[in-house]
Amino acid sequence: MRRRKNQATSPDLDAAAAAIDACASIALACHVAPDGDALGSMLALHHLCLAAGKRSVASWPEPFTVAPHYAYLPGLDLTTKPADFPAAPELMVTFDCGSLNRLGELAGPARAAGALVVVDHHFTNDRYGSINLVEPDAAASAVVVRRLARRLGWELNRDAAICIYTGLVTDTGRFQYSNTTPEVFELAAELSTFDLPIASMSRQLFELHRFAYLQLVAVALERAVLDRELRLVFTWVTQADLDRFGVELEETEGLIDLVRRTEEADVACVLKAMSDGTRVSLRSTTDIDVSAIAIAFGGGGHRAAAGFTSDRPVPELVADIKAALAAA
Image: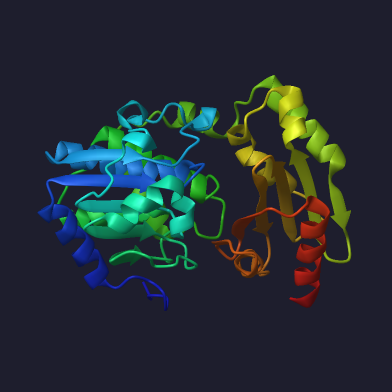
């Protein structure tokens, strides 16, 4: 496979494996409001570290909760609240986290760590570690974890396989996105040998929602706007909307996947105006690079999927996103 310019070289993989192998105690962390790949990749290495006899803690920033569709992940009960995370770990490993500010209160331990390994697949990663295992050719950070485990000589176990599969299936959109490579199918085949509950996992990840969430979706879709000239579809939800229906922010992760189905649009955008700022998700179904837009607003991601946060109101953000698309 041809390496992309920003793909980590084999020395990065060697260095990460050597650092993990040399430490008896490892602290693992993923980004705030973790998705399936962040949780899956972190928990997979957590299981593998414990199986290898290493002391391991795993956490993410407050709010220390996960979306209901990830509740089945093995190892969630083995995680550590950020308040109890080591202040200066000997070795810290971050997952799927493009910058230190995405670590929230865990950025302090990251800065104080004896060594910091960054495991990611986003080409926009800030490479803030002492070892940066950033591999943009990988479909998910979970793929990078599998490569790392192989380099360490660690055998997978069923719990780790469930976690890696979760990262793989979510970041490839159920094997539908353009990042679904032969390596993805090969890894999925390997993971399936661990007797994974694929049907029940898929239903929980992609199909089960509370009725309250469906009511919120109805409001968001009714509110959606299609700009035919720019081929942009966007909608927004507010903190008041979530409060009205009793929906948690974590439950709205899949809203962008409904909006991006719009046939007349090449770019989809969902803005979530919460009390602590507005979270913006961008998706592209053509060769439009939405990561360039996200980067301009201090965010990041991939060409086809990116995002950022802002303290500006929704109308201003929409106007700027439109201007960026018009100039693209």
